[in-house]
Image (cartoon, rainbow, N blue to C red; front, side, top):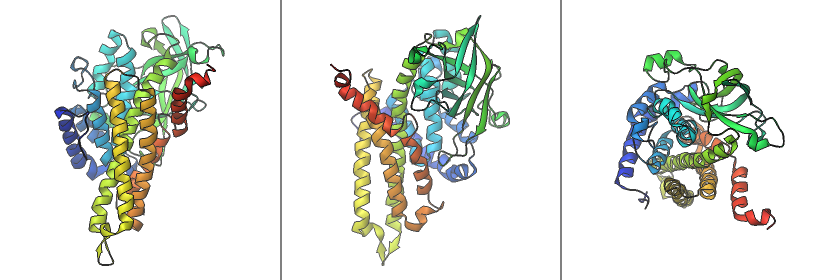
Length: 409
């Protein structure tokens, strides 16, 4: 991989550190964690000790004080080896922590961010609902003001860390007026105990007894997923949950606008994860085709192998520039809506193409669990769905390009 113009020496150091950790600590257990659909608590502890849950946050908030490109590099390098570990860091950082950093009061930041940045507890983002996926404005969860509390009722689904996590940012409708729709949605910080109290006690991570939990916030059954199987995904349920008024995140009615900003940056994270998956698949292909022999020679010598490998490498390089350009823009306070959507769209669809080619190049072995490419292919599919489907990314891009036309001006 050629060096990117966005990289300084510190980024190279981050890349090497995370790569070494992923290869030595994640690689040996990734297949087992996937097979058992087991959350990797032991590695969560190790990642927290390395500071991987607080890469882009200030030291004063418990983070490492590094920049956003360092964070994106972290996600990519984790995903080269295992996407479940990568999404654990990405969802926690971008979706669980960044809204509090970006929209929280000084008191909210002081109370919640250090716990998240240091990886003492895991965080998540409660947005998607059974009737509000791509149509996030269709949020049906309600938040009714009652004195110094809001009473939340509703169900979020497909929420990363809904079971294992303890701090969440969740959206709910504070104004039931149908005419308000998007303007009637607000955001709240909600808390609950992890479902894995025993594991948290064993590994000394994932639970904080001093964190006040909110009655009525629970999680549902763990989803049995095709990919990202070592990542925790469940329903997040609110049943007359009494959320203190001071847990309102940002202004009332601004939840929709704020979560769109969160999703913009989140798309860069998923794009980096997708890029890592594609790169990992290419790495496996280079290794396998150099070792596998047919007709008396390594199959890497055949032109039929050259073409897909050349295509994969070229597309990966293109995706890398899209991803890191979007990350650089975000880091420098520039608009990213179009660039983030392009990076996410291209990299996620590339991950699916690259991992499918990787299985093909491995032949029959690619269809077994003896090689990681079948897991990579399963892990890649959700990248085209989560954080906005490919169809939504195309709508976002087109609207940005055709805005004046669509507005009739």
